[in-house]
Image (tube, rainbow, N blue to C red; front, side, top):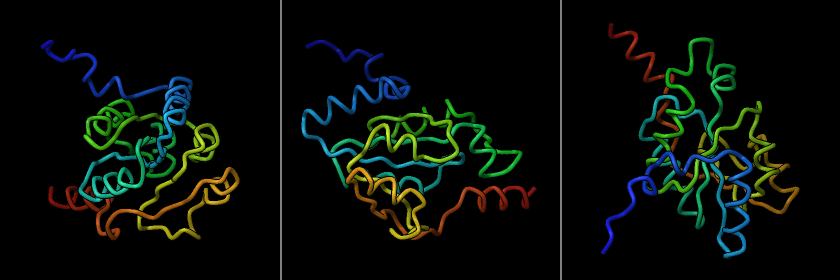
Length: 168
């Protein structure tokens, strides 16, 4: 028995640029896999992120996670964020056993990624309802579904950082 190829097992091999990601999605579709897309900044990973992504993966056969680029994370979270560069955030998320593929998106919203991939399910966290997901009309336009997954929004990277900063 051959030992596994360490390079093939590397989480960095699961971080794909959009063109390669589209090709992988096409193969998964051919194999009748249900594609799920989840997205976020994932700057300071916490249990809420884990529960969200694990619940998203339970909705299908292939979980793709879109990560906001550094520029977009800064626009969303503030001038001093993200603390962790996009490539490192992508590598951490790719290392999770229930995440299949990770990609970094540079657009202000996830809409272009949704239109490029057309996932069967767009999974959002419990800080949304199906009616408040900003991309809901885009997802519905190609026949996809929006699902709210994860545990109640009791965890926040911003709140964790505030607590750490106040303890100094």
